[in-house]
Length: 105
Image 1 (cartoon, rainbow, N blue to C red):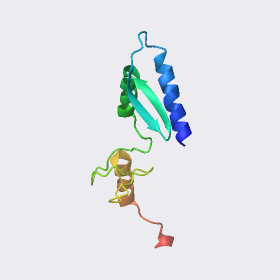
Image 2 (image 1 turned 45 degrees about the horizontal axis):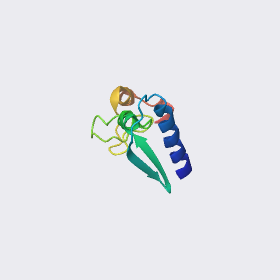
Image 3 (image 1 turned 30 degrees about the vertical axis):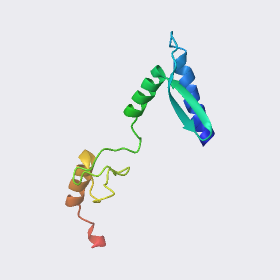
């Protein structure tokens, strides 16, 4: 895993370095295992921006009821077990009107 992370950082560094007309000194170093990757200011700015803008694909917002950030694929909260959002509201409305067939009662 360390090699993959170090390789990704080196490649990111190299992709951005080609656009810097006046290369300056390294302003930060990232250590991954035994490997050290030196980063110059433009790369540090770009990496910072990328990290700040990153949104985890598992992030589905926060629960409308308890504020938890742990919504599952169906927008049901893992903490309070209530459906959230418009989809959750639709599920709750449908469930409240559901009447099982006579043969099931």
